[in-house]
Amino acid sequence: MDLEDLWLRFLLVIQLAPVLLAGLRDLWLLLDLAGQWLLFLLADLQDLVLLAVPEVLLLLQDLALLPDPALLADLQDLGLPAILVDLLLQ
Image (cartoon, rainbow, N blue to C red; front, side, top):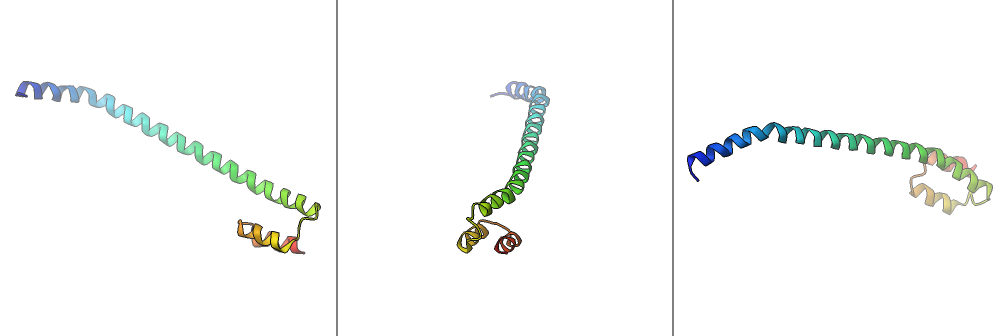
């Protein structure tokens, strides 16, 4: 590899650098957009769960499955807030 080859490679890199940087920028923007979309979906899922849990508990209570203390303890272990457990025990 002589000096002329090195010079031509350097010029090629200089000419391709803006294209490569633009591609990296576009990739970064796509990853950012995908992350925002994922956070949006997770927030919707959290809202759906928060809306569904009380309805399911009321349905279980109507079916006389609650207040079984063992079932309530299992639900509390799964993350059911203690306030809801106390309300169901009343």
